Each structure stands twice: as structure tokens, then as C-alpha cells.
Image (cartoon, rainbow, N blue to C red; front, side):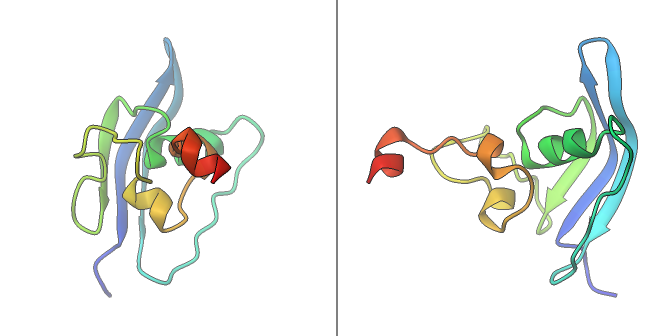
Length: 103
């Protein structure tokens, strides 16, 4: 089996004092298609927001291509590495400069 392109380990994210997700772990290898299933309110959107950087995870690790995708202090003038390959909630992950939207 090849090394995962995206690796998420023991992710925890909170909305204030409320635990939204706890202990989420998964790997995605290159070319693999993954679906997150669950009931309403189960945390699917929170997982995607946490992985793409739109929400800050309080615990756990995320690595993309073997490195932390947020090492650039969440620079938002370029799409984060996960958004650049189409992962997550792009509309909330990447805030494009206004001139790029109207050009």
C-alpha cells in the first residue's frame, strides 16, 4: 500500500465548550475517492472544515503529502494545499483577493 496523500489522526474540534468531533482518523491515498457518511449533526461538515483549515482543530494532526498543510500561518492569498487539489469546503477555506474575483 502506498503512503497516504492525506492523513488525519485523532482530530478534535469544538464549538465553544461543545465537542463537535472527537477521535476522527483516516487516510486518503492518491487517486482514492472518499465519502464521509453520517446523520444530520454527526460532524461531517466540521471534519471537512477542520481538515481544510476553515476551522481550527484543537487536537490531532493533519498531514498532506507528508507535511503540515498550514505551516504557512494560514496564508489566504493562495489556496491552501488541500483546496488546490479540491479537498474540503473551498468556498470557506480560501478567501480570494477581490481583484481575482472580478477579473
